[in-house]
Length: 178
Figure 1 (tube, rainbow, N blue to C red):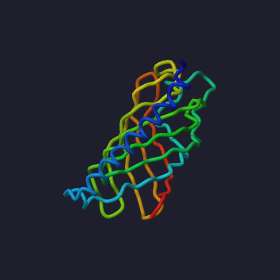
Figure 2 (cartoon, rainbow, N blue to C red):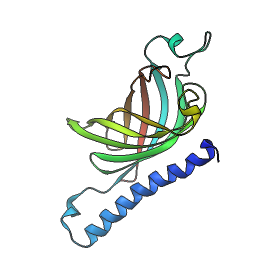
Figure 3 (cartoon, rainbow, N blue to C red):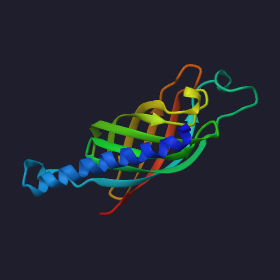
């Protein structure tokens, strides 16, 4: 089974893990436990938009090549507590390949009413110089700026020697439901 065909089940697994947490929380709330004060889970549609690569392109690409900085795609994000979320989706990556991802987000730092900052870790596909394009670990920092119905995720991915430079990413997001 190729990485491309194996990864969509991982996306479903990430979503079911989030849904399982939500169901456990709802069951606990129905039983009258102290978790009844927790907010309902938030579901977001994430729209991948762009990236910006820092550093010398020639350190990572062949002469004449450039990074694709228009990384369109879409995904879903489920936040079941203010600091915990999972996301999964698809985008066209910086080397013009299809990428699928599944990530856990932990954002413990809060700045005012609308900004949370933390890290994310998980799996990604589609980077030929990184595990031959198959499943590979992924991680970085994330700043979530969220209003009631819309927001953005600002993402920082650290340099991986010989694979990719420091990278900034941008996602627009829309909240589903209330």
